[in-house]
Amino acid sequence: MTKLFLLEPAPAHEWSPFAGVRPIAELRAGVWLIRERWEASLGLSASGIVDQSLEGFRDVDTPPVVSPSVITGPAIVVRSDFLPDRTAISPEAAPCRFIHDGDTVGWVLREGEAFDPESRAGSTQAVGGTPLRGTADLIGVLDRLLESDCAEFTLAPSDSIPDGSLVLGPTGRVVCLGAEVEPGVVFDVRQGAVVLTEGSQVRSGTRLEGPVFVGPSTHILGGKIRHSAFGPGCRVHGEVSHTVIVGYSNKSHDGFVGHSIIGQWVNLGAGTITSNLKNTYGPIRLDLPSGRIETSHQFLGSMIADHVKTAIGTLLGAGTVIGAGANVFGSGSVPKYLPPFAWGYDGTERLGLDGFLRMAGRVLPRRGVKVTGDIEASLRRLYSRHAP
Image (cartoon, rainbow, N blue to C red; front, side, top):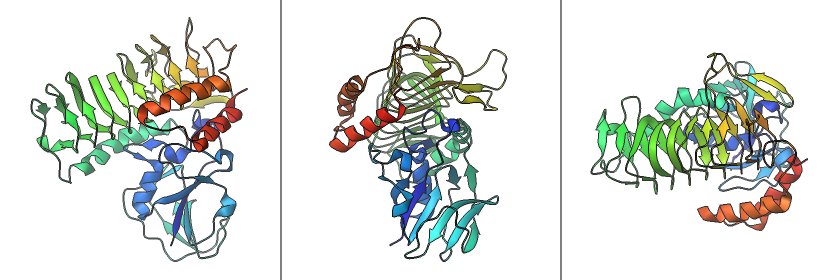
């Protein structure tokens, strides 16, 4: 049986703040994780993610992270920093390489063949898709793909439109798949579909402007939500626009969040607000310890890694990057970059390992996730990679 593996890009500041924190394959590109896009195109479930720096990573429903040395054919290895088109890929006979604009984006290995990312053996097969240069590109992907991603769900049977809802636009663009919707919800689907998946809830007083995807067991608690995708187990309230939440994170209170990428196990305190536009209307830069990144984005909010917590009233400037496990509180302006496990934002303290594990031990069970020995070991490795 052919196995599927995803090859992670080398750690680079362009993938801040997720490099070395969670696999790039497990970031959400539109509705789907990057891994899920490859799985759908190839008709295979991933057996593993290839990244020596993240070996031992564990989180909810994530394939194991393995070393490239364990991979032998029959297998297909594809790059996590490339999004295939939503079309089926039928690999040619091995050995073969997938090519996009002259770059290798995948390898088809024959039986017994060891994986070598430098190999140029065999035939080549052109595939369509989108290269990803860093985290900020996921905002562009969201803008380009979310409408068509959500439209796919309108082709399958859906529950009837909930009683007491107001629909602006074609009713067929409201897709309810086992969701609970209170009376008084407005569905504005003139620009795209709204998709509510199994176990999701939408409270009265919510306006959903499509395209919007609400993942399983995610609760929309009120406010104005537009052009966004939320993974499983989230709590969302307030004004949210052009934003991706990977999963299991809270934004349960008022406050604007726009053009942002938010990881897992994040909690945004009441009144947390992101700016997503400079006063000059110019392109937004990311200022990182390793150097400045020119994103070319006019609209870009915050990129927030896993396990981050913000205090009430936190104000984040356009292009803010927050490292894993940081606790954001203090007086004055939040810096454009906060390192992993920052305790406050004056730069003098870091969260200790015991404190980090205690918080994770309280947070994960709130979403029904047990902190197993493997998950605790993964959290310890995360801390050891990024703590000063």
